[in-house]
Amino acid sequence: MAYRIDPICDNCYPGTAVLVNKFDIRNEEKLNEVESVITSARAAEWLNAPQIDTFDFSHYCAVHHFLFSDLYHWAGMVRTVNISKKRTVFTPADQIETQANAIFNGLKFRNFYKDLPFDHFVEEITDFYCMTNTLHPFREGNGRTQRVFLSQLVSNAGYSINFSHIDTDLLMLATIQSAQGVQDLLLEVLRAAIQEK
Figure 1 (cartoon, rainbow, N blue to C red):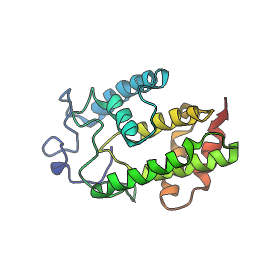
Figure 2 (figure 1 turned 90 degrees about the vertical axis):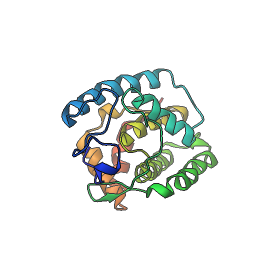
Figure 3 (figure 1 turned 30 degrees about the vertical axis):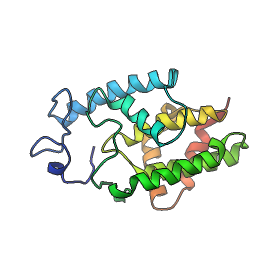
Figure 4 (figure 1 turned 60 degrees about the vertical axis):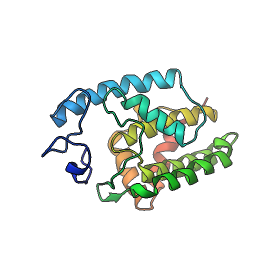
């Protein structure tokens, strides 16, 4: 997990950074393993038969709920604490709703990036990726939610993306750089992963 927060204030087991979970798993490594198995299966299920296609913030939250509701009672709910990770400070908790409205209204205004030529489409998706990464609206599971939502959004616009073909370390580096305002590597990574249907 590796988020910088005060665990006592954020629904963790006393004296640990392990999130209180429905399985009462108190070992972080074991919880990560269980999370990975459950969310991978749920992600495949969603992408096979998406439950919502509104592409608004409610849709984004619904993806998180679908992926994590077997694990956490707060699945799909906006976080209430400030978090940072690897020197990236995410949107303050009290500004998430306002920022989310701006991001997803912009997405709707741009017609969900439909009918864009490839290069322009990749640029828009890269910007959207950066904005939703900075938003980081959930206590845990932001990246997985983002990838499922983006996969559905990309497909809806007539393209495809397979995140399993992207080197995770390279994507992490690109994401960190983009949070510092340098999107070149992320643009390159996403351009290589996106294809026309």
